[in-house]
Image (cartoon, rainbow, N blue to C red; front, side, top):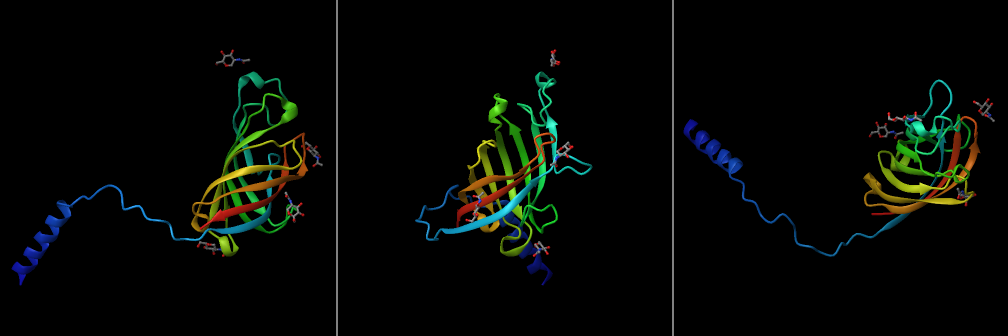
Length: 187
Ligand SMILES: *[C@@H]1O[C@H](CO)[C@@H](O)[C@H](O)[C@H]1NC(C)=O
Ligand SMILES: *[C@@H]1O[C@H](CO)[C@@H](O)[C@H](O)[C@H]1NC(C)=O
Ligand SMILES: *[C@@H]1O[C@H](CO)[C@@H](O)[C@H](O)[C@H]1NC(C)=O
Ligand SMILES: *[C@@H]1O[C@H](CO)[C@@H](O)[C@H](O)[C@H]1NC(C)=O
């Protein structure tokens, strides 16, 4: 009996050390899953002021030392912004946006950021799922849109766009509340 176990053990050991590798790719087949579309509506609260800002500057060029704007050209912000159901700072949190944005326009009158941000949900049907924005956002334009380039969880392989409107902006300290209408194609 003990001999049997040893033989089996040895066989398993041999299998483990001598795997047979196939090709590195599978057969390519037509994808049989139907694409779905989901719309989302929420408000992103990007707060730079106060004791507990949700957006903090992590780098800026020393060439902009004389610029007193809260977001001079070349400044980079790390964010963990709450996503809320409404524009009120007390409205229910349904997720958070984490990542970076860069103040990218040399012309201050055309304040623009480039966003590298993952929008994740922490409640409801899409709890645990997120989508990724990598896009230019021309903040001074009333009606603007950003590109959605991917996603996780239920938003796996997402593509889409988000329409953004500024609901509140304090140009002195940079605090902003942004309304998002998102259209996501996903599987
Ligand atoms: C910015 O930093 C560089 C490198 O340290 C230095 O050579 C330059 O003089 C600085 N410029 C200003 C405006 O402080
Ligand atoms: C969201 O999902 C997390 C992880 O699965 C879970 O702990 C949490 O209770 C969920 N929240 C809600 C509001 O469903
Ligand atoms: C989002 O859609 C609602 C309903 O159609 C509309 O009232 C609102 O202005 C839209 N907001 C944005 C940012 O597109
Ligand atoms: C805008 O920010 C400035 C500086 O923090 C502050 O004094 C002012 O009250 C703010 N305005 C509004 C409308 O929140």
